Image 1: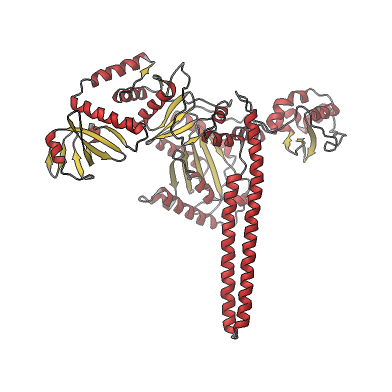
Image 2: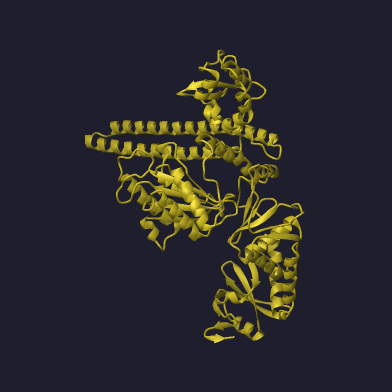
Length: 625
């Protein structure tokens, strides 16, 4: 588990409302926001309200609280990010306890906050938006060395809740961590990372300032004084603090080794010629050649820049023309009033109405322009390399998906997974993905469950209901064939075997023990009464039609756990057996009944409520059949 503060570089851009809205936004994904929690606000007591209502009320409360402090000039909102290892999924109660302990450790136990659990990446993570202003004393609290406090808290919480142990001792300076974060987020090399990998060793071997400047020039770099230290600068003006590359390159240590600092005698900008080995934006090293994809990426970015400028200019010109036309119309109206009206009072009143109408029209034009501008920037805005690959993979670009999955930082899915050892993926699933992560994991929705596909295995990410397990098995058969391998807990394996047997899926488990359990369950199922067999065959028939893209909801046989009040959905006959259809939520339960019961149920209208017992009997209007 890793907990870190995400600072806002510009205080003017800091907004609790913006942050809370962002972390609670689903972004048109079903599998992104798992839950939203409001703490220490009156909105948290709104039991009968939706998450959106509570969030809106909480934002109003926090904004009012922050406005009570008029002296603070620093950021009044604290953004805390908590990320867990791949495959770790603490239950909701554990997540709330972790959130509470971290906030109390930072001194924000009594402060208002909004948190959201996100599941759209390879790592479950928790965003916490905290109001730094105390809700009673209205003073701003800023934690002292929060990274040290968070590191100690994470070590304790990992032990307490049985989480995987992470290294919480900082081994790199802040600039190195920022460069690593940028490379991981964007998928391209940073100048700092490139210098460390390509230039550090030759620079350590120099014995004079002149030799050092020559080596730097061979890499397209220059060493300059800045403040009290030194920086490396490339031809594009990008700068890197020299000591962040290695401690040996700090000004003090270089002067001890080489003497007093001597700047380069050549003008870097006038005599610069691009060397063979120089820094340029390129993807990080991966297991596949992405040269052609990166050329396509840069070409598309350049085209988008041109299209954006063109569309933006058209929008600006349209706005200016409309404003000018409105102003001219106002001037004509005032001239008409001056000529036609003789009363000074009437003129004054009409002038005021004309001015207000013109002002309202101009504001409408400006608002429309701002909306159009946002649309243009969203459509043609610049994308990071990794984000571009995600968008291409979502559109069906198999090469972009392979590039995401070839990244060296990629981790395979862990936990309860379904795969086929020794078999290559045969096909890509035809189901529409909900989203794709930056490591190439495709997330599908199956009822209330989420299925993750990393190309080698499938994982039931959330919920282990029968529908989700069956969907994962069918997807595994579609991708890998009929020889299935299951990894995970004993309970997960038992549920998978039970679902495979009950659904009569034409598969085999590579684990002999699991395959024997499946065969045993199939043999036991063969002794089921003929009535239940008829119900199962009817369900299979409907399922086949549903797989062929017919608009049919899921059908399954009624069992003891379905007892309760259900909606009557009709009667059917299968191989001479009477079947009653009962609707619950978005699925149809099929129950075998006698002819007499079927005759009595035929008098009901579709949608009528019936009371079903665990034994399979149906009670109608006080009488049982």
